[in-house]
Length: 302
Image 1 (cartoon, one colour):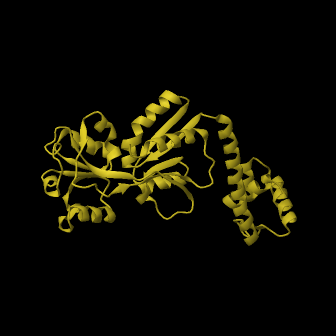
Image 2 (spheres, rainbow, N blue to C red):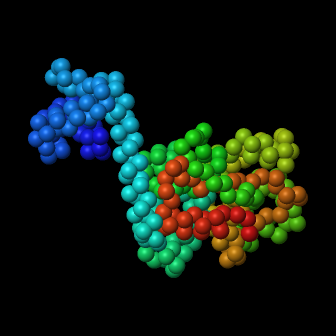
Image 3 (cartoon, rainbow, N blue to C red):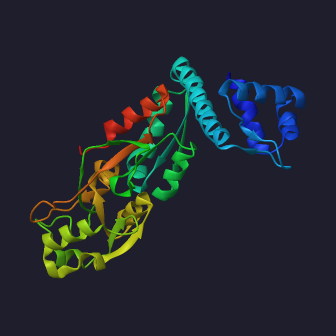
């Protein structure tokens, strides 16, 4: 038996017809029939039910077709792996980013790739984690950087967790609260509070309530929310709103003196953790390793 015979069987299975399969494969119908018969002779049993207008697979044919598809995928991946390893630092990396990773990584990653790896094309995308995971599984994306909380139960994903990153409150430079020796919940409630994402996790709300006092109902205090963390930070930079999130999300404007972290009476015992996610069993291209290494260098507290 050979790979060509498997392709012939799959064509008949997909079209339900020897004539349409032969046309699709650019073969004569007798040549296709001989190929299938040779495979059946070698396996010792029929693979296709000849009776009826539409040709259906026998139970053995269903099994052989399934394994033929798997062999085809393995062969495709083998060719891809060889191509990737021969290509070194060339090709395209398609990376999906969650809201906070977009704010932390997008600009510095693109700048880094242009400066140090100009032969690698980089395509960044954002959106809900569920859709990004679908795109990864459909091979439309090579990798994701998303919040650990967004990961579903999985057995087909390769997940590398970055170090946990602390959360805190950030305001504009010159904000009335900036000079306070320590900030209470009552003081925070005098200003609009902003948080990235569509809502705080139950764990985060419980920690905030415990930090400020069980009666504060912190989730009700959040006035502004968005999946675009950079948008929220711009609002915070230009208004008296206060941002709650991973401090590293605001690192660049903090370093430029545009934003500042508020001082609390005691450290906020809250962290976020993000993950670099790829499909299990897929060979990592050298270009993707470059991107992965850069993300690992950036996704931690500094």
